[in-house]
Image 1 (cartoon, rainbow, N blue to C red):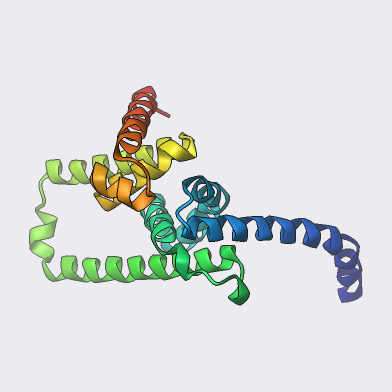
Image 2: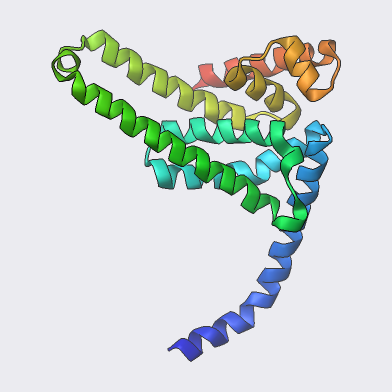
Length: 204
């Protein structure tokens, strides 16, 4: 049985390996360019790796909304800390997924600590009003909708909104982070917000 598996892998692995290696190299180059402030390169990194980050985060957290939040946190960290990537130590994919795993585990610990606090205040939590619970559900649904619509935007519109929405940066701070003129960033954000609003109003 083992010999058969080895033979099958031997027949197919070289072609898949060459393709995978080429893709990995491409993302490595994009991340290196991202470290130099290349916004379009970051959009490429985002498109290539965000789905994998999302998958890993969901496997750790088992919660769609929290996995989406972790994914955005990780991708913002990739943009801000891309200069820490060292190609000689491994691929961009592995570097980003390491960040994702760390963030997801930190979120699990935070959730566990939060649940422990809730248990310590048991009686008060059991008496929470319906409106408070409904508000939490509504906020989670809103986060999921925003994540879905952001993913549909073109990279040059998505990146400024990710920095503003998840990092709370102003127009000027986003412009500084992207090394772009404030007027250009403001125009992109307005266009991105308009499309984001249209997507949210259209629904799933």
